[in-house]
Length: 446
Image 1: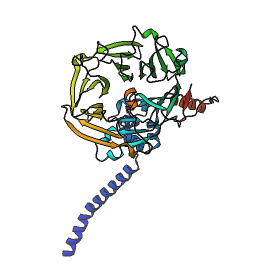
Image 2: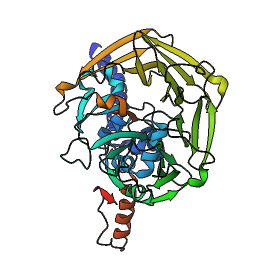
Image 3: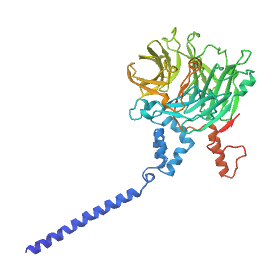
């Protein structure tokens, strides 16, 4: 009887054992099928493209190695243009150039991160560099591109991330206006660098005087490599001494902006040049600035126009929260020092550079403050640790600013776009001419 019961028990358990075994086999097959599937089988390519557009730039380099498709997506010119606006965490970098045209950069977002601060400061190699001193001066930035001046009469447009660059001569201005000693940025009344979205073109604008004191306004199109005279846009004289000593403009919302030097001008306005309409306009500074004795400087903070002025032991800051809305000017103050605001951290904290000591020694001092003006953190970098970087002499303090803040991007320099178009034509049976420049190499427009 016992044997019969055991046999019955075994026969009853057999179907159960078979069913569990079948389930295990199915799971194994599913896992194997899942492993064999690529991400492209799970997510549509369009969705992957949208996700990549929001990935911080620093991560994109590694993601290029995931697959050939991802590499193609990230390397596409249209992707680079869209990434500027859609990236979730833009990287702010401060570029410094010393008296000997040696450069270093500071990743501002990494300055106060204890895990990244050790690598925040690094040496940078400038494009088209020669062995003579005083070759380079920093001018402006726009959408990740940096505008430099290189002696004697050249502009250099450079993307520090991709390394692509372009050199353009402005000897046209020197010869036309008979000014033998004309040299940027000191010889210009105003200058700026911006992007005209309607024409997909980067423009350099320059206001200057000829030897007779007549004012002129010229525009360089990087798309066509041509200079355009815009004297018609000058409805009234700009005035040589009415603007900040550096003359550098800031690009925002399709226009370039300059601030008046409040010690000499009584209208306390911000001058605007619309790149699409080719016309000037002005907006008023906040009432608190009017009658202010200390010089007030223009800048950008969190994608907004900002003004700042330094006193003995504090820095006053005004931010226009809504573009061209006068009532949106908001006041902030940084205590314990004279600082030049650089950018916003975490969307609200102000990161600033100690401007009082930058020309005295080889140290760069950064401060982070909250919107209440409370000092949160201080960080100091010794530039002597950067190979070749020698620091600054006192003469640069009066003449010009030797640093610029830019947002890293993959945006190509305009000549790079043309070169890639030529490569496409070559593949389609349209060979380049002898003087065409191959993709990835620098062009020289003189």
